[in-house]
Amino acid sequence: MIQQINHIGIAVRSLEERIPFYRDVLGLKYLGTEEVEEQKVRVAMFRVGEVKIELLEPTEESSPIAGFLEKRGEGIHHIAFQSDNLENQLSDLKNKGIRLIDEYPREGAHGTKIAFIHPKSSGKVLTELCQSGRKEE
Ligand code: ZN
Image (cartoon, rainbow, N blue to C red; front, side, top):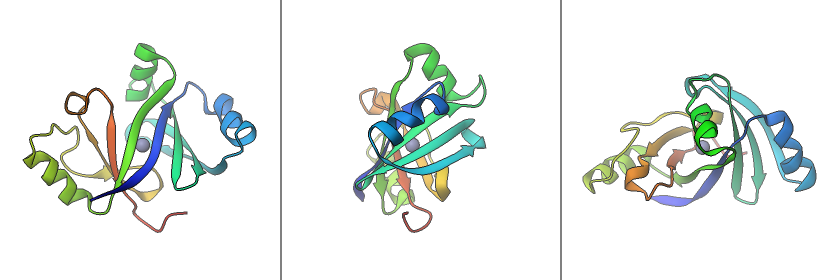
């Protein structure tokens, strides 16, 4: 079951340049930065109420975020909904004929499990589903 919006992913060219806007100008709680090697990104997380803002900076030219920046520039990249059971959620979506980028959960930032729905099935909005791997900060 989808429980809430977990985070909004924003593609940026430089975390260093963008972190001050969210942390110092908007005053959101900065949760830290980590590298997610599998996705070739560095991720900075902020908390605002129940929702997080995820800034994504590519670490390599072959990163999907580098491709996004080249095509569309900086901006909102995806919306992530939180599910209480990602595997069931994915098989349910498959049964409903929804195209998935990830048929099975993979590792995301901060110990979460994530999967993406194909934009063709979601009106071009890249949609992530995630399930917390541990208690939320
Ligand atoms: Zn995300």
